[in-house]
Image 1 (cartoon, rainbow, N blue to C red):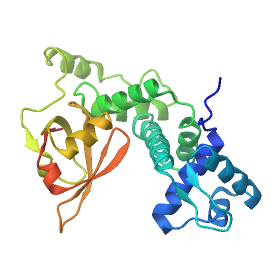
Image 2 (cartoon, rainbow, N blue to C red):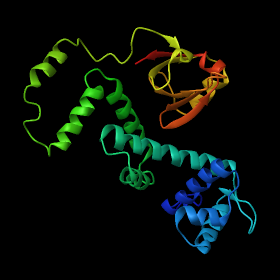
Image 3 (cartoon, helix red, strand yellow):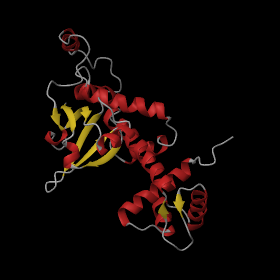
Image 4 (cartoon, helix red, strand yellow):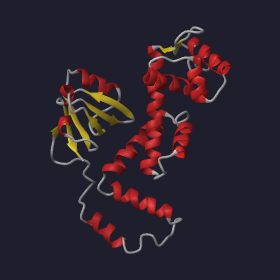
Length: 253
């Protein structure tokens, strides 16, 4: 029997759009959604009634539309899937960060199973920090694609690659020897999680999101007044307060 709370790709698009408009304008009306999705008002009304019936939105005709707690949780999950897929397409597959990548991520976000999403997250993290891959490896893949899969692309580079493997004992080292608090990581820099002080709210919050030792943090920006940090991790975009960041131990990449 199908799950009565399940969402179609179209309803997920509506939910994601409502969430984005709320965070841009605070208030959402039918015409805002119709404009954003390039659909007619009756189509929006029908979708809102469906979402309301499933418990995802609070909807009354001619009133402001809001998300329920259930709806906000679902919207954040959809946005996370989108962010992960777009990062994979742009940072790993080297597609241009343009409308084509955006549209592809939109289509993929609705169908990717949780276990596949998890592997994609791990692949992105691995490719970004493993010394046997990293940015050089990704750049090489881009050159390979740009050269129409020319088999001579790696000529002259093989000895260098072999040397890197010979001089890298055992498995690649994912972590540096330094352990710092997250507050010491600068903007645009990355660090891998070592541990979070237990019995703290941030420990519970990160654990709920599946952020465990080994997860990769990207510090997107830091508030110069408060020291609060905007951080990307596992497809989530989080605000971590300075006192919370003090309790998070990481290893810079």
